[in-house]
Image (cartoon, rainbow, N blue to C red; front, side, top):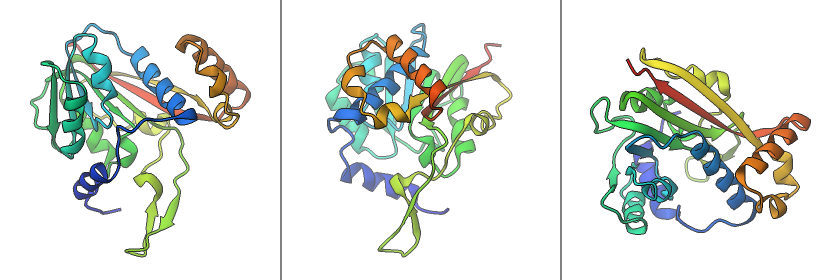
Length: 241
């Protein structure tokens, strides 16, 4: 599928407020996704690149931990607002194309791209470009919907099938593991979680009061009974040499 992704997401960031407050099940689901990602990260590092920074929750969290954060997006809108929301001498905003990152090899300890890869035109190129910027021993974390059933509408402007939410790809653990072809890849770890039934039953009304570890146990048990997870996190580790 060919389209001008640069122009699309520049307009997208102007038309939609990524920083607007979430409510209900959406807010709870996004919170648990953030908690899961953070639980996979050890804090013994200095710098993190947030690719497709969106509402900049990564800056909000890691600046509090004294880390250097680069909030990157293809449009100037979200990085600019991220800097306004979370001002810090350790926070930097940048508008750049994630397929051609303006960084040298071995620049970052940690690179995170949450809910981005399903939107990009070439997932393999995307992964390998992000992985290139990692320092030896660095970590790349990707999150995306798990085995999403892509849905389409007929665009009233071009009369072509258009994917809802601009999701171009659906992923499982096998597809994600195959994407990184860098010879310096050390290992790949996968976590699958988030139960559709718990969301459908609006259990967030009660579960939102539980700490992450308790919720995680309930979620794991729910997926044993009704195996319909909605999120996948992949952690690519670079060799330390």
